[in-house]
Length: 89
Figure 1 (cartoon, rainbow, N blue to C red):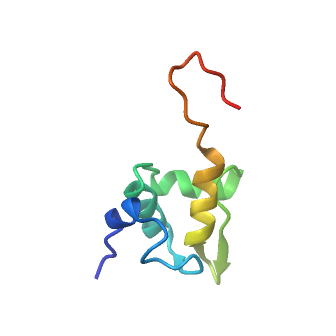
Figure 2: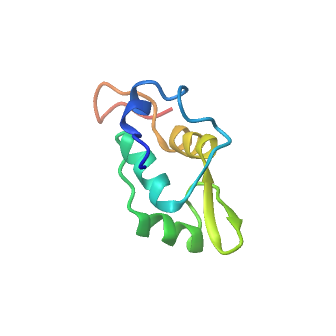
Figure 3: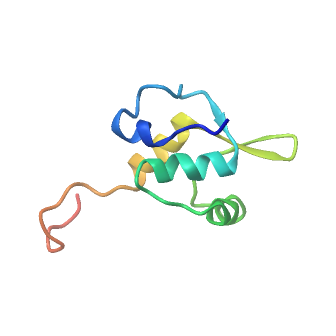
């Protein structure tokens, strides 16, 4: 049964525990549920080249912790701005 990640965009701290492991497809769905679509292939590329969310291996399988995905999003988002001429802090 697939996890409905859309509800977590409204209440990101409820439902999924930060220590829950997601596979790459579920991680991409989780990020998309937050309004930040990232392709599974992009996650795969980032695992090789760096720059993506922290992951762990379980055997040969890549696993992402929900809390680490949230940290990744928080680190990548800019400060709120009123216009493109506002400088990010």
